[in-house]
Amino acid sequence: MRAAVYGGAQDIQVKEIPEPILGPRDVLVRPKYVGICGTDLSAWEYGMYEGGLVLGHEFTGEIVDVGNEVTEWRVGDRVVPNSLIPCGVCSYCTSHRHSLCEDMQMVGISMNGGLADLVGLPETTLHTLPETVDFKAGVFVEPLAVAIRGFHRVDFGEGMDVLVLGTGPIGLLSIQYAKIKGASKVYASEIQEARLQAARNVGADMVINPQNESLSLRLENYTAAAGVDLVVECTGKPQPTAESFSVVKRGGSILILGISEEPVEVDFMTGVLNELTVHFSYLGYAEFPEAIELLADKQIQTEQLITRVIPLERVVEDGFEALTRPDSSDVKVLVEI
Ligand SMILES: [Zn+2]
Ligand SMILES: [Zn+2]
Image 1: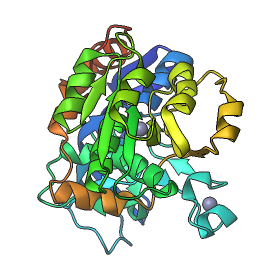
Image 2: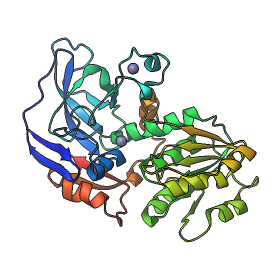
Image 3: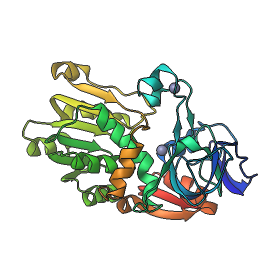
Image 4: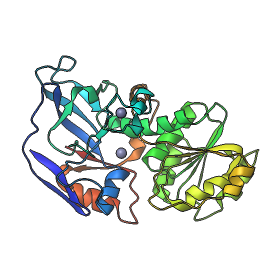
């Protein structure tokens, strides 16, 4: 079968590898669409994963075979896997903090993923993809679960003003989730025009390009209390992360979803004087059912987020290489298997 195999930084090859061997409680899935995510791009740029790994942790597919002890799943079922496989027994797992699990496996990161004709997965990783969620939209279950988990960690309430920094996939999903959960106003800041347009299209009340105007000045004119209740940081860049401290109102919260490779220098004096709260949130696990339900109810738009669909053969040139160019204006690129 064909698979996109990771070799290290700037080394991914689409090649023939043997089909997965199923254990008694494994399920064989034929992936339909796979999303390329920021984590994969970091691995491409910096070399984070083990060589020989089949990439792809955001995907949908159809079951084509089941191990002989599998009872829950049948050939033909439409599925979306939860990419996290926590151990289930450590103190973090038993206190519902699965993303901190001491012995976690991750599909497409520590075990073979979906950028292949076939992938073998433990049956427990799978969720049913409802008929009302098409295979492309289902790719967003994982990133949506990441956004939802972030909001769950914050004391988020109706009527809040929210500012989303960075409108890549997680930012665009955060804008929509904030709206669904009753945010009063949702503002978005982004330097790429195509992504700003996407933010408008998914319902941001105001969009700001901080390269053209001052974020804090613009917000001052819009928000009653000089600042927003909640900043959701999705850029993963030090400068906007630091700026969060000056655009959140007194007593407000900052939710960090972006992963900055660089250390971030922040103004702790403002943090103390304004009694700010900073929440960090990593991955999503228990949030998968809520994410699937929102997509099934058509409450989340995903078409706006898909900028290109490419075949597996072109995953390096039109996927990884294109997405890591500085002038890339893509939001989410899907690979059609
Ligand atoms: Zn991801
Ligand atoms: Zn665990």
